[in-house]
Length: 344
Ligand code: KG4
Ligand code: ZN
Image (cartoon, rainbow, N blue to C red; front, side, top):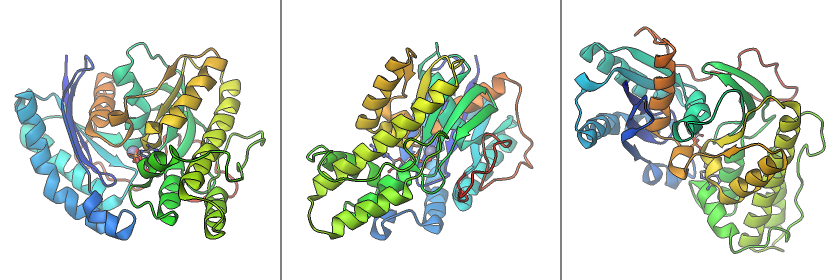
């Protein structure tokens, strides 16, 4: 049995956790930065990096205290090394390096996306490779065949905005504030998902890629028309996202009969309407459906510690010279998508 300390600081959550190789979460703490960023309606990278500097050390001390452990009890230190806002990533990675050096423990540089991708295995021991993963977060929207630790085939990505980004931008233009996803979901519960006619970009296309920029613009136009209530706009937007995610995932499930299960992860996977629709889709394909609990969907330290545990078990550690990476695709072989922006 090994114990891994995981650090996460790639966006606006400062988080740490202690997880063991028997899938026990010994302690985890997350500090959000809503108060810092909400005046700007989105994450300000410099403010985020400074907040991580202030918070990470007390959070690390806190999880060690919560678990009744010291650094000497930890077998390895895993830190997010990218992709993400580079200032924040550097804070976490340098902290991880310092702790590893001081305590003479191995360092594991974790790809944040691999943290999300493997997080379902922390709570679902029966989940075997390969599985089909819909990874939906603030920065990414991808369908991946997860073949093993460090072994991914990207089937689809977004050609413009990520799913979470679409939620955040929609929330901003509807005046719902930041962070946007939970706010849209909350108000959508009072609206009619059929009230506002909105496009379903790329539905019907044979390639399983995503596009959300046009949807967001359509919400903006419907909003300024003044013809619809905010709850109806939010509910109709959310329904359009659900329909796109289901349609694109359906193509990927058809293309990957070898997948043992259909899995969703990332912050947007916390959305109840999305979880419900994907549960039904998996049942139609006779596949088990796995979605991590809500706290494990949004950014946290436990997913980084668990990805660290999986990598450590595979003998994968990193030198202290390892670099932080603003971009770091899970599947480096994936072809560039025509029209795709930098997030692909
Ligand atoms: O995975 P995550 O915590 O951070 C990134 O790696 O990006 O995902 C954050 C994204 C944000 O865009 C946020 O608005 C979205 O996840 N999100 C949601 C919900 N909770 C978080 N989107 C829709 N419904 C939710 N309940
Ligand atoms: Zn994330």
